[in-house]
Image (tube, rainbow, N blue to C red; front, side, top):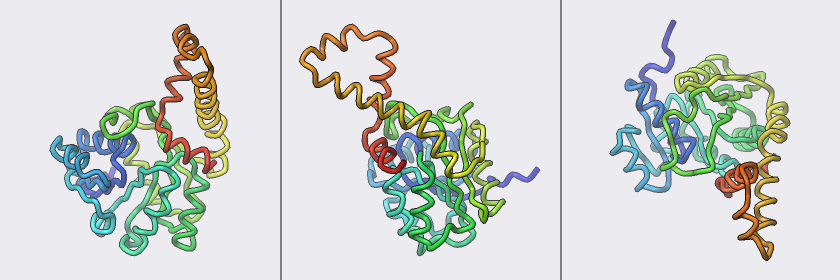
Length: 244
């Protein structure tokens, strides 16, 4: 079987928990792949390069993506449209673009706003993996092993583009599923987004009560799970709640 990932030039935009874990996994498992990371924090990018997690670094999206085979957008949902605007003038029709956002309808709308339609080489995606910790320092090469990744290709999405993104996630140990955008957002609203919203709300409410220290001191295992969930990245979850 042809290895469609072989010798590919992959660009990861956003080297936080999600993007950093993709880079770490690929750097361990695929020595033949060029990995370029794009981000605003040069210190983090240089750390990743020193560790051998990425091959190249850049703070400029257009420069980094000019010759990319696959671009992975791993930034908060409401930031994706700005990234797409920068990509619009530089990526070729042969460059496959995918994302890792938790809400797919908003991403599809952002793609249409930017390109006028959803290009055949755009594959919406969402890894069902994460942590209450955030940032590159929390990333792990094993984050996606045994986890599910949902792709939501549209009717016109190129089959080879889907195959490339599928191969990427499978190489990281993930199980890849496909479903419609609408079904994805409905399922994730019930199983992920609503539980996180409830956790944030409960912990915030209790923290503002007069005896909050006493309450938290005697909290048992079930409540500790709520506090763990509520310690997740607030910016990322703000965007998810607003988007879905």
